[in-house]
Length: 195
Image (tube, rainbow, N blue to C red):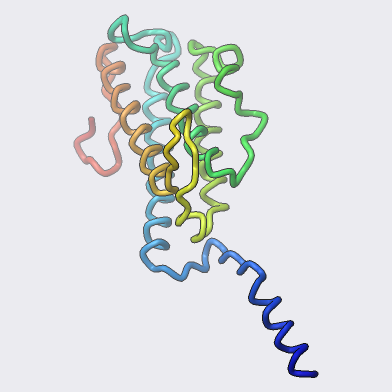
């Protein structure tokens, strides 16, 4: 092979994008540890959030501790719709047709229908897991996502933290909804004494 031809081939190969590492092939140990920790915490937060939902009897899904607040069912729908919004911004996995768009949510998932709200909420957590399963180390380093009407770009870590914090915030509010009805909230697995 002539040297000139070899130089052209080498230059062409260098111009090709590097293949993204598979989810298990992360070069940065911190990014890998952070990602795997987040995945495990997301599984835990799904489990605990569904336990909170399950603790509320169906006849109280339209209840609220104060007139200014959402109903219990709507609180859970809101929590789920935000899960989708945060992780849809990554454009890694299309939102399944089984998850209604925000403007269709009230019609397709009535806030007083416990089974429908539960199925919707579980589907939103599963959607996030599908996105996380597709995520690579390169995706973790992104800082170009737009969220809602905010012109400021968001990083992947920012989206992950916002989603986790938002879920925790609204799940924490549901403790009051349960307590007002005389229901002891489920015990968080990391707290031996419960809520």
